[in-house]
Image (tube, rainbow, N blue to C red; front, side, top):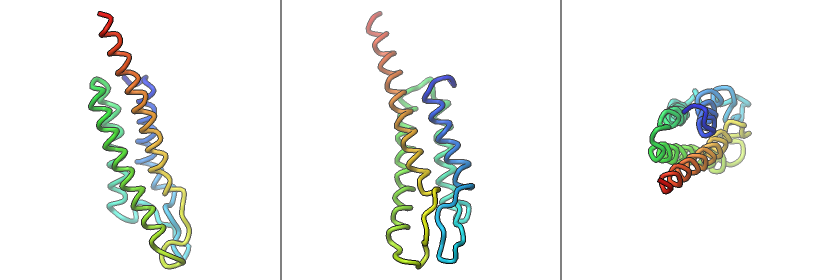
Length: 136
């Protein structure tokens, strides 16, 4: 069902993964050139995979357990991307390649927060269904 709150959270994650990385730069290099997600194919593919998993999660509303698992997988994918960004920004010292971090590096953090909120709402729905089943 599209009107559930977790669907809205997952829609926000899909928008963050599909649209935001291509408007918010990830970092500036030493020459003040903005680096976007589409500059490297695998980073763009990771963001599109995050968006696709969020959309798949929206349409798994009939099977809440599978929806929960897909969201967990999406969180792991976001953690890998965030780990790469942290490694990239901390491993290169000084003005070698990364000069300034952009707001795009925080997109996986925002996605993880919304995925946790969606999983919490899915868990609440599952508990509600189980409590109604006990009354029968």
